[in-house]
Amino acid sequence: MQFKISAEYIEQIKHLIEIEGDAQLHTMLSEIHFADVAEILSELGLTKATYLIKLLDSEKTSEALMELEEDFRERILDNLSVKEIAEELEEMDTDDAADIVAELPEEIAEEVIAEIEDEKHAEDIKELLSYQENTAGGLMAKELVKVKETWTVAGCVREMRRQAENVTRVHSIYVIDKEGKLKGRLSLKDLLTAAAKTSIAEVYIPKVDYITVDTEGEEVARIMQKYDLEAIPVVDHDGILVGRITIDDIVDFIKDEAEKDYQMAAGISQDVEADDNIWELTRARLPWLILGLFGGLGSVFIMEGYEEALAKYKELFFFTPLIAAMAGNVGVQSSAIIVQGLANNVVKGSLFQRLVKEISLSLISGITLGVLVIIFGLLDGMDLIFSFTIAISMLFVIIVAALVGTFVPIILNKRGIDPAIATGPFITTSNDIFGIFLFFSIAKLILGF
Image 1 (tube, one colour):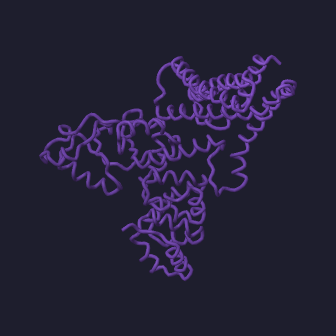
Image 2 (tube, rainbow, N blue to C red):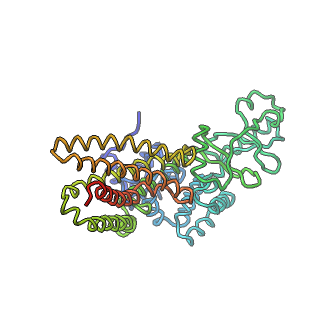
Image 3 (tube, one colour):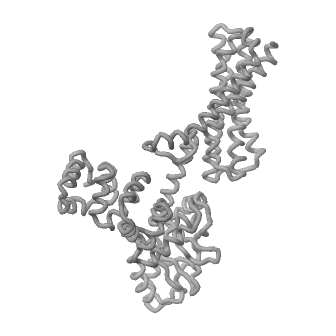
């Protein structure tokens, strides 16, 4: 039966902390999964959560720490001593430990690494910190099982047992040469069925997917998704096996990137959480609001240039929100599809083919919506030429908005800029301005004012 955390359970934990019932706390929490411990910590608040972290065994709390929201984890770490943080890191895989160290102030990070008793673990953490964030080197863990091609099956099994003690999950067994270069992978079935004195060189599989330390995280995710991999080895530029990336690591990366893209599409310029302070939230949101303000002012100036037309055809004023809304909506739809396609590497073909496709789609949508506007005009008793003007204007606005929404993300991507920026206020604001300008320009051409 799945363990459930109730309000009564949390209150019981709080009471035991207040009376320092350490033995009972150990009993209650010893068999609970670390993810449930993390949920309990989040419910307790900073002071009581810190008490539990210091009380429980690091083997459990180290994993629970990694499940916490980053801001809450940082606040807990601020309440731990350098030695206590080092004890937590010693129980973590190197990639998780490196993430924790990267969150610490530089001088504290150095002290923590120096406090780690396992020198090899400390060196591995420092190595991971030397790679750029969101590359394979920055995402990988050093823990893996590797065997040499010159070993026998019997010797291989003995060495695997020794190495596996430090590896949480054994997804693959990698084969290297005497210089440490990746040669292939070892099938557990072949290992079990081969004679004890058989050389590993005779049974390993030379074909193995791998990536280099500077491969971008998005590319790592694409490769692992394409080939349905649970883990992928990472090599340096000399082909030396230096680590591996597991599926749970890449899922976390994808989640973080999706959150960043979602916030960017919503007009938030940096990664923030709901419980961040007012200044951080303002800094993240205000720049795009300022852009929206200037875009709105641009629309006002355009409309001021057609003041006489609005006096003669006041009905035009009532349709400006419709035109602006259609421009923004179409632009966001087009850009969202393209950004998703770029992320999944499925945007194929030439730019000309993409141009023809978008114009075709826009014509279908624009004509359909235009006909509906004309029907609405007839039912409302509007002049046919005026309804026709609105319909034609909408058609051209939709075409331009779709083209802007399609090609701006592609251009940004080619220039190395995150195309997700084009799915939010940037596209909406620019298309609002283009839409209003096109609307009045076409109306002037048809109505003759």
